Length: 484
Image 1 (cartoon, helix red, strand yellow):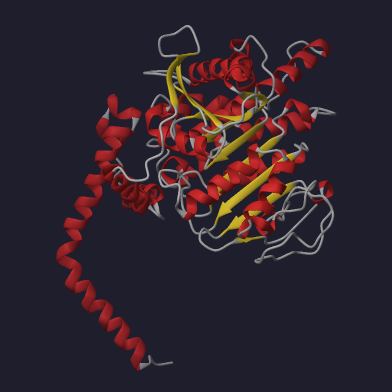
Image 2 (cartoon, rainbow, N blue to C red):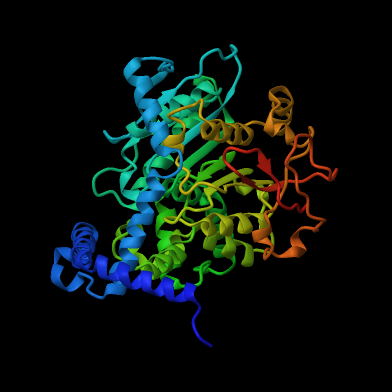
């Protein structure tokens, strides 16, 4: 069959375009290779010994690498990020609408000189009243946990929403994962011991982490169930193995031994854009040809055999499979996961996998919020402008997580708006997005899909405890499907 005139015109136009762009092909290729090689030289640990052998040469590998770097840049600057930063800088330069600084700085929480924290005290609290406490683990990357100053505006915004906020400085130059978690353990212990003194509620201590901080917060929350499991298992069979490989199990035992005193479980976790499966993340980065350039490689590159020991999803799955019964009170009673659907650095599947595992072990209150139109959700940027739509949405999610169920229901009735669609008092909102239909159905009775875009409570009167909500950033919340 002969070509149509439209096909012939299209191919002719493409050929002309190729001829026109041909003189630019060589400069573009040189620029792309230069960017990838420069990034490899500065970020690949192997470049310290032999830079020539680690430089990528194959065009396909270079293309995938530069595409991953471009996507990572869009993750950091995409969405409302630039607009929020401009708004924050303008307000700071004009000194308009600046929140009052209520921080008590440089409180010592441990024996080392670096063990300092900032305590943000909410204004207008009632005398003798106890308010929830949020402890922020700073750092999107594992090597940036000491940069707590960048999170002060975010902490002040949360404090203005009616909660104590603790911002510790953890880790330091050359600090490893165990050192960072050791410092964080001492900071949380200080909060438990002193919450009553500064007006906080020791029974409502929540951990908030973003990126690598979300990973470390989840690891820390597993200390109590892990220590309990190993203590019970060693009584029956000394040296019992929890994880699938011996190196991973030994690495996990080694870390747990460094935490000598078992603290009480925290009340809740707020995990934003986190990574919870290190082996899965390493595989994903290998597909994008950045397995030697990422922050995950610099932190876990030498721990490939023990990656399972630092994967909260794998640990929770092992606890579920190797235990006849796991008391729910050993875990955080409330977990809120927040993720952007289009995040290409730590993909949405990381949070979805942890969400399913937490549902499997019957954690009382598990919620997940997906921002469908956003890439990376960065609370330290979003909360720079508290009046923005994204900040209001995040504050509402965090407020509902740290508040008791009855307070959340009353707050929803009092505030109105989009989130007045929450359940009545005594119930907790539950929904599961249709992409999670692979979750085992025997653990929750399915019901007819519910689609809700207006106000008012869901039509199903049954009490529900797990929520998976997809939020369209500017429009109101949309519940895709629902399960008990």
